[in-house]
Length: 586
Ligand code: ARG
Image (cartoon, rainbow, N blue to C red):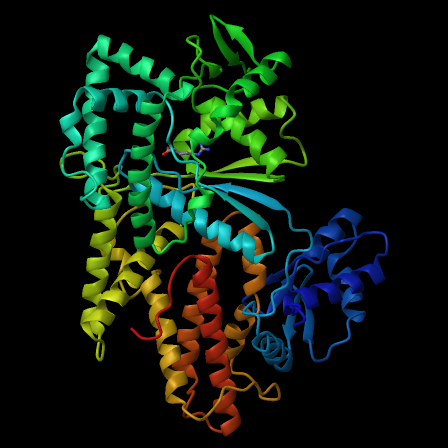
């Protein structure tokens, strides 16, 4: 299947060659945009005229003289100070969509990127022995959407779930459990993942309290960390138990989230333990890090803490212990030199931005990162409650992610039940989960990641507005029309003149590939979300204005069914990239 050149790319090419004919030396970009006045508007001539101190309208007229109108460019005119307004032919619109429709690879004719690379994406990284909260939701949802969008463009993507499974807190936990063996005696092995996890979480909190209040326990706990890092068998076995139990729990949450997280991609902090000493040696020998009061530190002039004072990055503490930074620096070496990545992407809370700034700058000074191999934090904002404050329970505690997901599924099931006509209880439960989880993901993916957003379930499952349910209903309605059509098959008829609502929908559908490419280049899934919402809106107005099954001729019926079907396929493909299901019936 040959990839399809989008209409805007074809028009852009024609304009570029006309421009090159008029001004061979200029290498000017026509700057083509979608426009309300015509199909497209080109603004590039204005900029060129300004540079040349030429009359823009005259230059534009000259360019137009080099364009042959026809099937693609049906009409072109100079407007305003020197814009070009371009209208493409109906035949070209239907023809392009027909070529996309014929692509049986599921890519809708979208080409792969010309020079794909290798990205390691660090996302969905909860912490062992701790509950998952809404912050972990964002990393998982945004990360998995970015991963799928990148893969769609042909990028090689390696996933890394950098779970918190190492460090002081495990010495603390293990020591506490050794001293209070009865605390986990709730018939271990028989409890569910969820119950085991809340036991662990409780244990963690109790251990933390003791650690903070009892100096002697603190010393014993610290000794335990050393045992752990030295590989003491008993300590290691207890640690492994915590990790295994937590993983069972993580997987149950990821499954609820309808997310394909693979065990092999989980490389937690502990996975870099063997590299830590070497990382420190390399940094110290190269002079990137220096000893300061026993600790190994990296200093920066231009990176300041929240109080405006410069902060150092501590790679090794004065007691010899390694922390979060040493682990991340080792992970960079692994990802660059072993996994051969050219891009390292970290989907992590904005509150860790200072950490990553310092870690990346350190890696750059060490020569591990450079112009060819770059690292970037895709920082996300905070999830807020309806009151606009960070999301907490009434008692002021962090909200458990599972509770939130269950509530979303309950609300969505109620919506589905209310609308359902011929659905069984089992179907309502299945659709409820697809709608509820879709709603949560969509809300997360419809604002740009760096912004905070309000977690408002009522709004998320509303049928009207910018929600996943709206898109899922649009999809299900199209599928129902296609079923109703029975024997009549969708077929493109490029000879038919298009209604303005058909043109608007068609031109937008043709831009799917460009939108995915843009979302990939900017790591911005919200651009795809906005695009899909627009698909559903344009479809709705097409459906309002253009009868499908009752259209005036058999060809018209087939052509409109074809428009319906390619709309459905685009919605399905796009939603799948966001990790959202499109049920056949709702
Ligand atoms: N586990 C950390 C947390 O829950 C996130 C890890 C982010 N990734 C990294 N390479 N540091 O906050």
